[in-house]
Image (cartoon, rainbow, N blue to C red; front, side):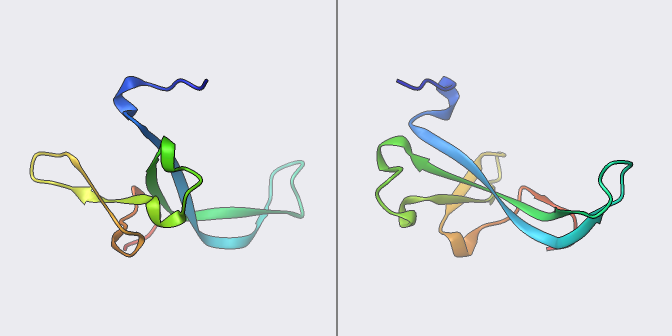
Length: 88
């Protein structure tokens, strides 16, 4: 049985990446020619542990904070990044 912090409730959380540049070449001392992904935005999603394998429509995406700073959750088309390297 898996355990996670009680503050997570019955949910499993995942980050999803929207790439800004998927052909960036690493230029470090041993990375010449190595193609890496540069994230442009990170999205946070959650799903109830009991519904993890049911359907991707069960996932809720972070869509911002309410007036008291509590997270709001919604459908994929309502998602907002939790991190972005550019203006959204």
